[in-house]
Length: 125
Image: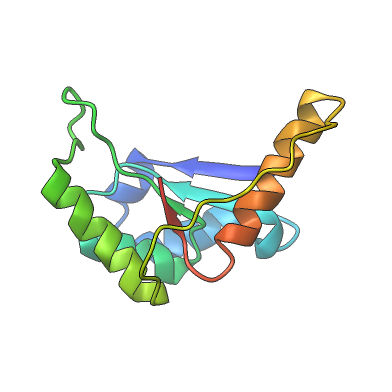
């Protein structure tokens, strides 16, 4: 399983798209790696992450976080991501975890489901 969680580093980058490309460079192929950009507060930042190939766009609702969003702000981020991929409704990955014999296999199945669900447009989580 290849995954990268990006938060503060990306938000401070002068060129977010270039930063994501740099983070993906070690992966065997971009299609094998999941990248979550977390703490997105602006629709423009969400679109930049989408354009750079992010798999997941994270919003934060924890009141003490400096990147906390209210419902209206989160709806704007979701709308921007949906517009990027022309998705009108939420997409929920289906994980076939039955019969997974090890934690690695369980996580691997989850990663496969996330890759499939975010193949065309990132998911907002």
